[in-house]
Image 1 (cartoon, protein in one colour):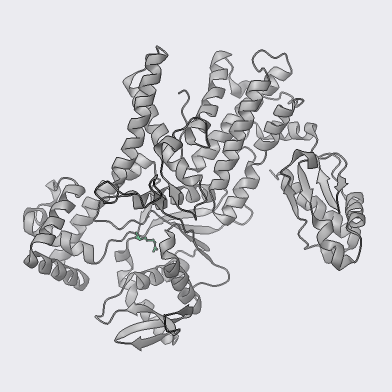
Image 2: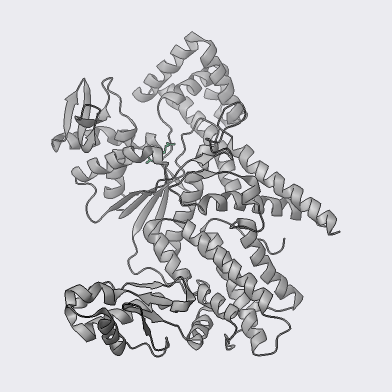
Length: 585
Ligand code: ARG
């Protein structure tokens, strides 16, 4: 469906042409929602921006636009405010008719994009061989959410995990495997190395204690890159062990299946990638290393900064691998947009590889490569989140603590309310609420900022939190249970919007498409969170002010539909954030 905002934009654009000629066909109509109901629902500032070029009084321009507008069905007669703002008030009958239209639609009226693209979202892309820690939280949560949104609006999304599965840390694990579990190399079928965490700890201990072992680890890296058969086999076992342990976390976090293309995947293409850069004359030798000198980056002495693409020891690095990945994604995957949800500490890395990708002609104007950067997860003290002993907090512990806190709260509440619930119900609720709270706390912040991780805040029933939204959803399901109403049977009813709380809720429901459009463009999921939070607030006001089950017809059915549309919008919106709902709480 075309949203009211889009319809208004189109109408104003047409009016501009009718009033002032086709030269204005491409002029941005500057329509936006107002933030004060006093000025109606939408406002256009275009008359002000045209005053200079048209050499006319903006109020007169505004009047000509209004005279040429054809929006009687949708809006009251627009008014001119102040120096020349045009204010639009949408008719409540029109809003009602749109709600009736979206009611039977699973997509709630959100249209598919007219320009579907092939998009890669590069996530969660951990460096494996280590237990997952808090640093893995944001790429997983943000990547999942962006993929879901882009897919929902109709893009062809490939989720590609650029796993750090190559290089130094593996040496230690491979050497340890060979030393402590030599049988694993011959009888892989009953491989039992325990948990990656234990395995990693033991290997690390050995590495720190024993100089010979350290040397063996270094040797293992060399053998790995040289393709030594037994080393490759050991590497595969270690990757499998990591991947198994990671998959458990992905399941707990509800991540979708991803295509795993680790750094190792690009190994066969590194030579060609470098060669192509050389043929283009982009590579220079400097102190034994092969480099591309970057434009716009300089070192401390003001000299151009080199991006090393082949180290002096002959090895390739993270940048080379990412360049090979860019080339592969453009040529083989035929991708139009690539999104990297990766921490801001890699800002330079991405700016640099994108620059080289462009200079090599791999990234053209038809491609959009975006580093969807994010900030750090901080503790409540505002410092980087760590355990008391100073290590990164394990992801497993972080998530389990959220779940356990919810469980304790639920159990206390159920005892107080003398409610008996099954173990299964409690377990499932605790898991859904706990994980949702963590994800939502992350997504509701502007991703580019750091944020403070606080269980108390994210579990607060009153703030902009997952529990607050989940509760609004559950409230609606409670209405249906209490009144024995089957929402799906409420079809073809007229929607009457008389109370201001009803109208305000109804208008908000219809804005989902606009919000998704914004997020599709700027990749800021916090916009959806804010939208859903405001929706829940408006619903709660409506619920407090307008009787539903007790109301007479036609209000009763109309309000039930409004409640149902709210709940379905919350459910859909949350699912795009990667968050599940509960039917009762
Ligand atoms: N493995 C990297 C890290 O943990 C992130 C990789 C992001 N993706 C990429 N194509 N560089 O820092």
